[in-house]
Length: 260
Image (cartoon, rainbow, N blue to C red):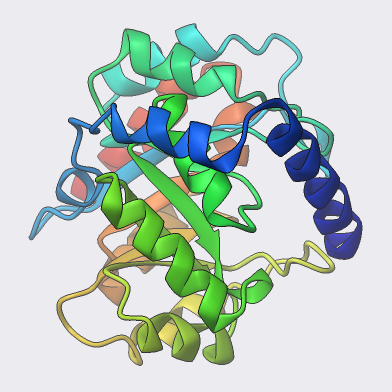
């Protein structure tokens, strides 16, 4: 599945460059300096932050939410206490759109993360043009050289980068390029199965001073409490919110479980 996604993403990228050149998209991005600090929003000492994710569907589960309104979801998750929003923009496999970034930004005041399969700096600049404050970079699918190039592009326009890892090898790559925000994704990219022990295994190998985000498979108050005890700074929660009848109420329930 991952190879199919990457193949399709490369074709999308080729078509995007034909519509708007790299120089043009970079020039547009340089005109827009993000005003919302993603890392500062999710890294508050003594507090576990929550990143609410807008995801219409997934390759493994199909449609997650039939009535998917990015504006109302963004507003309600902010009101429920999300410190930031993650917006899926891949259209073919996740039902997203780049315009969802604009929808989320226009009606909220919290930082917006673009979550997609970013392969080149072009998409980093593109993310800024559509209103993102941060971008997801997946260590597994990027060489060290390209990861450095994408980080350099992000920093040049004031975007934060959340570098996602799925293994110790990925983590070593992320640390080599000196990233500030590391996401540990417990879902295997090839099989989409969960590896619930992965966060505990990798957290202890991350130096102090980094911002750590736990991702995927977070559904219950018990899971929230367990991840909190590991010392992560934020949880990125998508599926459990999107399948809930009331996503905002589900987020409040998970947040309130920390004080129960």
